[in-house]
Length: 484
Image 1 (cartoon, rainbow, N blue to C red):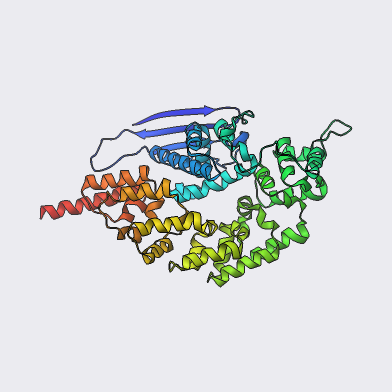
Image 2 (tube, rainbow, N blue to C red; image 1 turned 45 degrees about the vertical axis):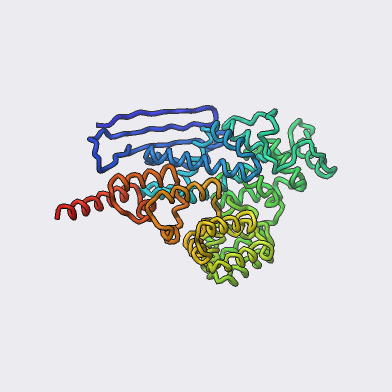
C-alpha cells in the first residue's frame, strides 16, 4: 500500500510540483527503505522553460534534500566569490527557496542520464552543473544579481539597499562616454511611426528587454549599430539551427554581443571547422556555445597558442578536442601569464600536468597565490608530504578548486573522528567532493552502527542501493564468522 501526497507552488513565472510516493513497508534494522519516487517539475526564469524537462524524474526525497543543501552551498560560495559579504550571501541563500528549486530543476536537466540509472551526484558534479548558469545570470544582471535571486521569479526591486549589491559592474551613475551615450540613445530612439528601431524590436521578441539591451550597449557600443538583416538575424538563425533553444539566446548575446558583428562565412563557420578538426564534438556545439560563446570570437592565433601549449604538456590530439568541448573557456586563459605558471606549479608537486589538464582544465583558471598555495600549505600543515599532495591532486583534479573554509576544513575535522589513517585520503581524495551532512556523516554512522569495516571509497562512491547491499553482505559475513 502506498501513501501519496503532493505539494504545488506556482506563480505567473515559475511553477514546481512535488509528487511523493512513499511505500508503507515493515521496518528493518538492517535496511533503510526510502520513498521510491519523487517527481519534480520546474519552469525556468521569467516564465521560460530552460531546464528542458518534459517528464518526471524519479528522485528520492532524501536525495532531493541533499541536492538542495549542495545548491545552497554553491550559490553562497558563488556570491562570496563575486564580492558579496558572508553575511549577505547567507541571508540571500536562506530567503531564496524558490530560486534554489529552480537550480535543482536545472541540475536534473543537465544530469538526466545519471538519474535514470540511479547514480547520485558528487559535490563537484553539482557545482559544475550550476556555476556556468550562475555566471550567465551574473553576466546578465551584474550588480543586481542578489535582487534577482531573492525576488525570483519576479523582477528585482530597483531601490534595493547598496549593501546587497555585487561590486563587479559599476553603478549606473558612473558617467558614460559620449560614444556610449550616443549608442544607448540610438537603441531607445522612437521612429516616425512611434516604434523602436526594427533590430531592437527583434531582440525584444527574442527575450531581451530594452534595459538589458542598454546594458549590453554600454559595455559594447557597436552593438547599437548592427543591422537586423545583415548582422543580428543571420547569427540568431544560425545559432537556432545549431540546436540552441531560443530562450538561451538572450544569455548568449548578453555574454558576447560581438558575435553579431562577426561574419558567418568568413570567420565563425571557418573557426568552427578549425575547432572540429581539432576534435571539438560538432554534435555538442549548442552546449559549447552556451557555456562559452566567446570561443567563436577568438582569433585563430589565440586558439592555436592554447592548442600548442596543451600539446606541449603531453595532451593527446584526441584529448585536446575533448577539453575544448567540455571546457572551452580554457582558450580565454593567457598561456604565458596563466597556463604555464600554473603548469609549473603543479609540476613542482610531481603532478602529470597533461593528465590534470584533461581531467580538470578549470583548475588552471585558479589563482596560484589565492587558491593553489593555501591548499598546498593546508595539507602540508596536516602532515602530508609534497609527493602525497601531488598524488592527491593527480587522482582528483578538482581538489584545489574547493573552498578551504567551506569544504576542506570541515571535512578534514570530521575525517579525524573517523577510524582511518591519513593515508586513506591519499588513496581517495574524492572524499572532499561529497556532501558532509548528507553523504559522509549519515553513511559513516550506518557503518558504525552495523559494526562493519569498509574502505572510504566504498562508503561514499557506491550508489545508495549498492551501499545498502554492501553493508548487508559485510554483516552477513561477520555473522557467519561469529557463528563458527
